[in-house]
Length: 425
Image 1 (cartoon, rainbow, N blue to C red):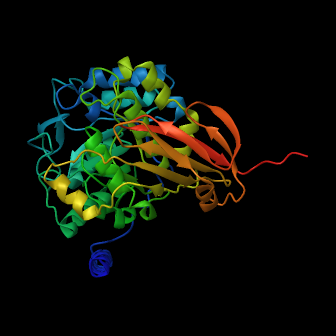
Image 2 (image 1 turned 90 degrees about the vertical axis):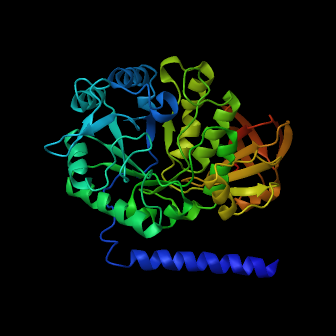
């Protein structure tokens, strides 16, 4: 009803006002201003692949070897990020974090050097709470020594999680800002990735970090729908140096802790590129299937994600049911993720130079026809049709005023580059 819509707008206004007042308080300090993340970061993280039990120096070195051997580094995948479960305890004398001696017998500096010697960047993980999600020591009360430790180890990327930590926006922002300023004080450029699993971070993220998680972990298609539905509402907050992060990529290669079907993994990659999201691989790069290799090495799709204009775009057309971010968040808080709805979407993203990228996705269980209509092209500024290129088939399709495509069910997708009509004399 109109009354309900009015109340929702009022609630949104009050939330933004409260956050603005918080940021204008003495808590806010200086912005991040580290000059990093002008494009969404690309790399690999251990969490979706190795999880907690299998992370260690040998596995990290093997990942770095495989990443370079496959040429992924040449495509922009530079970060090798160690997620949770690397630490054991704190040094009794200094209070510094100590790596698990069984997993990292030579210490973290050796791993850092190995990664850097390959021309890659080294990423690590901590938590703003007393304990990490994997019950390792967190950084609460030890922020200064931890920031100095990470800098001394040559860390280039730091993910700060939010398990076992205060959940209110003011307390969370205070902790994240403290870490932000201490990282800046080390004078080492460190990409600062916040992980608070909530869309409200987007409203203040640019002042806090280089990226921020907007939803909870993606472990399958249900969570994927939730993450995409939430992140689609946040495009206005993202841009160079500051990115919405709907979570890492999930592959279909065997051996990873988390996997989805090959075509679903490709749909995720397509949507992440349209949303200018970080492209952090969570697949088994040591035994990656040819399909996953084809997905993650498609330079034309990567170029959409890495476009210098830096605009996250969103849904141009859909027949999906109405939903609210608050409802999606409430369900996620209860760890309840409904099946994706039986619907389709058309996403569009403006690119530097006047081209657009378009993604057609099918969330329904059965194949469905999805249409790119002339009206959609006109919304992008192409009045008389446009020149289309299929990015996954790597094939020019010629001039079209519309396109009708049957897309596979349960996570099928197609992606196109839309260019102005080129007239030759």
